[in-house]
Amino acid sequence: MKSLHRPDLYSWSCFNPARNIDFNGFAWIRPEGNILIDPVALSNHDWNHLESLGGVVWIILTNSDHLRSAKEIASQTYAKIAGPAGEKEYFPILCDRWLIDGEEFVPGLKVIEMQGSKTPGELALLLEEKTLITGDLVRSHKAGTLTMLSDEKLMNREQAVASVRRLAGLEKVEAVLVGDGWSIFRDGSDRLQELVESLG
Image 1 (cartoon, one colour):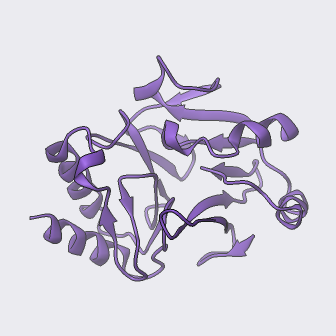
Image 2: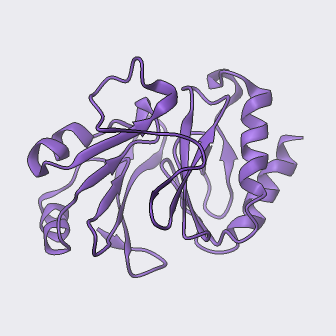
Image 3: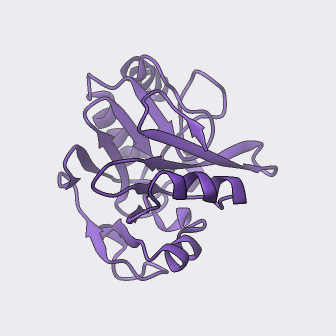
């Protein structure tokens, strides 16, 4: 796993040839138990690294299209899974907890519910006010810039744009960690504002 902009955050990736981008998983290492977000498959090296950091107690899935390797990792580690309450009725795997807008999953990790994306109630996560972790709606196909999911995949473009505007209103964001593509590690709020302006 790769060290990120703060010592308690790591990422690992799986390249998707069809879309020519990386799919990213994230790990937040904390004394009370580590949390994985949208985890892709772990190599043997990554498994060993994760175990050396204390394993995993929770897996958070931002949406049903980001199940990735969550079920396999949970079955091998006994980690619990949390998912978006907006998909509770038909989420494809069993979750131990359903996350709603505005709640603090654990101290320092706030849940933000996105509307209008390709799944209902997609989640974004705000870590200690400065690191934003996004699922599908906000992504990056080019280093240093953010983009929104293409219109044809959105359930409701107006709601999706409003959701992005909401994220852009988070003034203290330094890093934007995207599930799909290139993460941003500096001036995250500025990059989100640029994204909003590009949407018209």
